[in-house]
Image 1 (tube, rainbow, N blue to C red):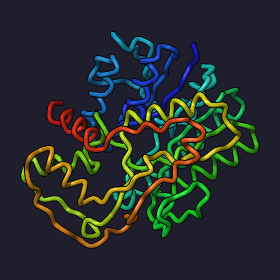
Image 2: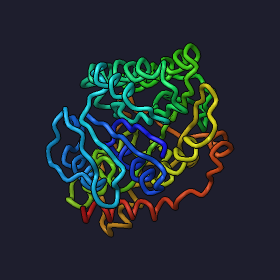
Image 3: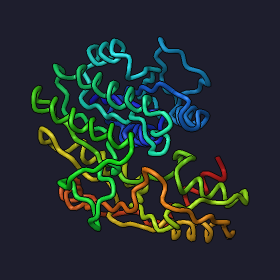
Image 4: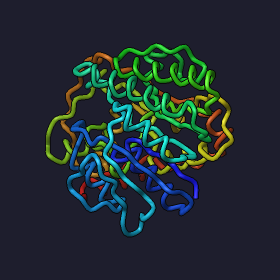
Length: 332
């Protein structure tokens, strides 16, 4: 069986992808996460439980084995900023693939705590790159973000566009991409950059727009819509996301490649609220506000390159996917 390291396995993307890989029965999966307090800690533990780990607390120096359906996953609590731990882990395991989802995400929080983003996204990612420069991996795939495009005046963003990051988070993501290109060129490491747009779905972060809006509508709390609700986002359902990444992982990689990971469709946030109102059969109280600092006005992925390489073009219906997500949220 091929061995895959997934960093950030207790996060939304890492968990979802681990589940996807495990269901194929073709991989031995080693997952790491520092289980920090960013986001919903109990949700991180819930994700691990769903993967077959039954503990509520995890010590740093112990390996945990999954049980039940997902019996091919090993978990260890490791922080990617700890070079010795990361280097030893990679040296002692002949990983075929590394899927790096342990980046710190979130535009607004990056203004409040930029050091966290520098430590995780730049220092942590450099530790990964240093640890694999002499390893024989088939591909390193890592999460970047559509935020690197900034306020791009084009209707859709293409991988060759000039980048214009306008938040600390986006700046660190662009730095990760630059570092990856340098290491790929110098050490001949196959690296795939995933410029991810807005992924949503079951077990998603509760601070992301769809689940946050649903919670506020349900609890009769007001929703803040910035840029008067005119901001547009490219939404991608998580099952589509994991299928795309799986196909890209199993495609013979070029030495360095960048892919937009989105649906190719863009929706106004005020229209997303209307969909959620319909699903919940309840009206929202909305505060229409001016554009927020660091927020880009519109994201829409040009996905021609992604489709050409992955051969994936069967995207989930947005309304049905949002309904599935909200149903999970209400029953979790």
